[in-house]
Length: 322
Image 1 (cartoon, rainbow, N blue to C red):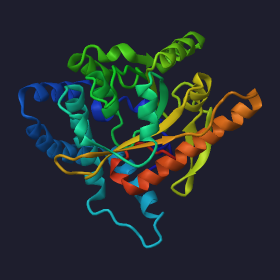
Image 2 (cartoon, one colour; image 1 turned 180 degrees about the horizontal axis):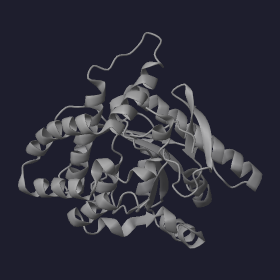
Image 3 (cartoon, rainbow, N blue to C red; image 1 turned 90 degrees about the vertical axis):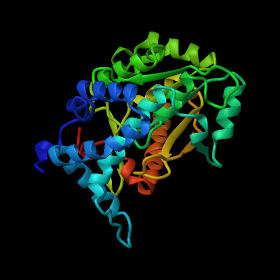
């Protein structure tokens, strides 16, 4: 793979794996077929992308090789690239299921971590910031919240910061499946002082704000941190963690991971980790804490990547300089 090809920024790939007609086809099949048929269709669809998407194959192979190199005893991934693409296809189906109201709360299994702290906070009517990733399927929480299936004894609005230029096709599908869901989507391109004030008000009203911490900004690519990630420095966005600092609400890292990477149906393990940092401090100290927050997130992300590498859905060269 040439360096020019590897250096393509994630935002320039224009939803190649989930373009408009692909998403429309999933939506039509979802309405016409039993879910089990959709899951079975994921296998030939994944094989199609395995054969015809060189970029997906190359970037999957790059990522899995870096994961394997982290284990002293060596680690192999039989049919790894195909299974990696298949895991993504199955997760796409489950995203459609969740937005269509067909995923029940009991498919989530919580751990002995900071979930009780978050749940108690939400039960008290207080909000929080959730930093998620493209590992696994943390959209489950947002979809379940839209149907009031969160285990919290009140309605729980979720505000998600998205790049609508990149995720437009998927967002249109969500609007068709669940018309009220898009009301809480906020384009990262429109975030300014007024948006921060609005989100602070919503947090004070007990709502959630979610933002991905594992993709650099399409508009300010050079504004990022470089942290060790799978034995090589990788860029992590500055903006997501800067926003968390401006909002100055309790911040949690959230990961939802399939227990079985490529099974037809799987339960999910939900992991919740609270950051101990607060941002009531002078500006210079705040910048140091923003970096510490980002570094802590990168460490958690690396830990879960090693456990479930096939659920890594950043199909681009994550380590390329931006």
